[in-house]
View (cartoon, rainbow, N blue to C red):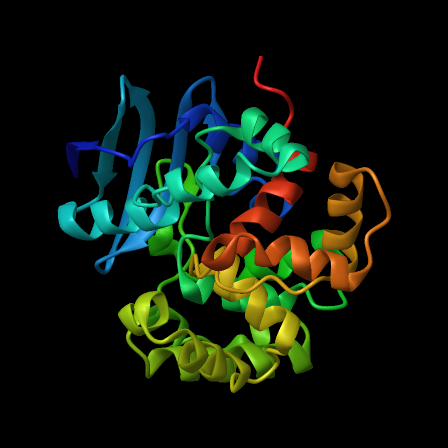
Length: 288
């Protein structure tokens, strides 16, 4: 067993307490990490190892204690944490745009310094997107749990890590307990195993979107969900029922789809951050 300490510097402004409040309320990963006081604990599968990270704020930095049954792959852990917690997002241009939009500026004031907390890996969000389609969240969570618990080596210090793509490639997806979803997840894992994550994170937007739409079981809504919440690709934010509802509430009037699109267009490449903040404002309790 090895334990390593890491110090991570987020791009300011950054409020770790907002990240913790979001994770404590986010239903898609409920019970998959521990938020106790100001400490976040989660198991991750990185560099072929299961690693438990304990993350806390220390001044303007994050202090991380990373433990693994073997060696801690420090570089891989650092990269995964920076990606998962969006530590490199520079929100200053987004906030500058919001300053001229009084209804939304009030949302920014409440969430100031909140960096989107993504799903930790593309494999996890793609699998979740398939499992949760037309399915109650609690049922999808049970299916996901069966995937996770198929790999006992992913349990450490009482936490379970979601399998990496190499592990998933070896799995009999009948464990999902739903034939159609099992087939879709198997196809999705096969597709993901043939692509570099760097391409998904930073490749040309239209090419990444086209790749996602080619995955079995991934339609336009799921592809956009993966782009935003799994990859941090904030270029596009078409209206959906939930988005229209929360935007109408913030702007104090019933918005049409065209009005939603016009408001989002103000934020350019930040428009999905705009929609995420709108949704997060309904999810996060006020900072005590």
